[in-house]
Length: 273
Ligand SMILES: NC(=O)c1ccc[n+]([C@@H]2O[C@H](COP(=O)([O-])OP(=O)(O)OC[C@H]3O[C@@H](n4cnc5c(N)ncnc54)[C@H](OP(=O)(O)O)[C@@H]3O)[C@@H](O)[C@H]2O)c1
Image (cartoon, rainbow, N blue to C red):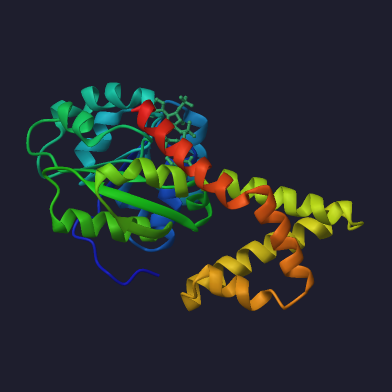
């Protein structure tokens, strides 16, 4: 449960897909907003009905109704649709609103350009584990967003995991590490389990071992703040099986591969903007 307070507690979510409904559920679960103070819009009635049934929030197919009823407006449509949505809501948006975009790759200058002058904007980059409350979100403030706006968004996104406030220029590298990272981690998990299967374990057992090992190691480093190299050193006993395996990873260039993957996905993210 988040203990900070937010000064804006009427929330509108435009786009009730995977991220929009995850945010809705996360904010409600954390008690940051009451169902009657949250309104979600989407062209898909089935999605809206399902959201209303499970959360009792207000629903509408009219994005302008969201703006008229909310203080914080969260844009959670696919990046290619953001410009249209902004054009639609701009006539109803005022500097008293706070506009938050989770759309990957849409720059703050682009968001601000389509809104009236003075409207505070915050760009947010969450990742997939936000859907289960274990996300890593980075946010960057627009030119009109103040400390209060920052705090409001930090508190809201803390309901979906960890939050960092950075400069917008960092967001491509954030995409490279935490945005694309879940795919890299999934590949590593699958391969680790494949190793177990090769050595005779069932797929189910091998995957369970791999998943809990990744969770446990990551949590241990998070909780103790121990440097990863130090943890690795402690696990590698002289002449033992772990250092033999680490030798294979080093020969295969695992570190260099991961660094190159982040470098490439960071560059690609920049190209997409
Ligand atoms: N999913 C993630 O883990 C993740 C992570 C980081 C960032 N994001 C960002 O979050 C945004 C949403 O992604 P998503 O994965 O949640 O996509 P999604 O599941 O497709 O959800 C988007 C929803 O917006 C609806 N929509 C389309 N046009 C609309 C309009 N004019 N007004 C209101 N709603 C509209 C879509 O309806 P239709 O299906 O009928 O088009 C859909 O239900 C994207 O910009 C993405 O970059 C997502």
